[in-house]
Length: 182
Ligand SMILES: [Fe+2]
Image (cartoon, rainbow, N blue to C red; front, side, top):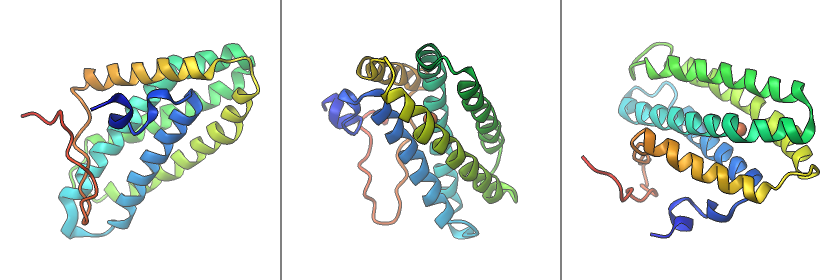
């Protein structure tokens, strides 16, 4: 399978398109979870979604911290903006660690995911409406940065032994991953 197919066309994406697509992916997973809120029949599915949300968010946040934020600091010279984004990440990571410890029937699961969604939306607004908008007008090679971020994300995913298998919602639109191995 070509890289473009495997990563949903991100192989040639600039940094902003790639990171915006990541945001959209996590947002969709969180919304799928929200649809199952208070549904005690779907505990396995809920836990699979949580696993995927935590994974996607962890890889995305690491890539941003290692590559995007230093580049933005240098290009915009606005430490406050990047400090705020990093503080958001610390809060999101804390919620991810709480979720990773939870069982599917944990009384706090739904509420914790709801807080994560709320904080993520705030963070996405900060990045997309402020940071990315300013990066577009800065002297920053977002195509080269996109390539670096994409490569780094693949390395991080490999370090985690690959992404969890996509969650199958009723309707089963997701194709099985070809690297699923025992
Ligand atoms: Fe982000």
